[in-house]
Length: 155
Length: 108
Image (tube, rainbow over all chains, first blue to last red; front, top):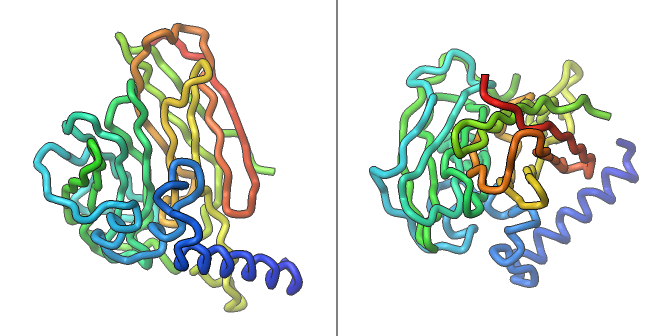
């Protein structure tokens, strides 16, 4: 990328960020298609819930982690899956508390698809991971600590 | 241009089990190369899976998803049968996109 291109790209990003913060772009309304930039930039569970258009999340025993390890040998590749038994689950998001930005991935579950997803994330250090579930307009979460013996950020 | 995704879709009872392995660098934009220059961020932002024109999963990813990400999910087979195509596509933050498809097979 040359300097001209870099300036152009960063200019565009700033303009979008400004538009979002000024309320010109309603981030929750466009989140179905457009990438929810705000949600991916905030650092805590509560801020992510707010960026997705909710108010607060409650802990739920109906969400469980599948194949998430207690100890991850390599933080660059940590398998994480989450499953929700809450009726009308609309989305499942995976958050890593101590990463530079908490939100890792967010999955929209249409009707007919099982509320179970699994993927792999990066973890910078030992941290709590959250599975955040949106069901029937409300937010629920489950938490699990994953110990990392080798960090995955910064190479 | 990136390498193709590896997709497996298997019919298991009344569900279709989909597993996807995406070939992507997933650069966070925080890492530095040997000269101390920041490696520009390059990561997948959105992923969509469809079957017979119906979206069965869509996802938004951030830079914290691992390199060469995997994705596994199941959807109800209602209307989908062996031989139907599951199409998975992604778009990254640079606007690159890729779409691959796989036919649903019987569980082995």
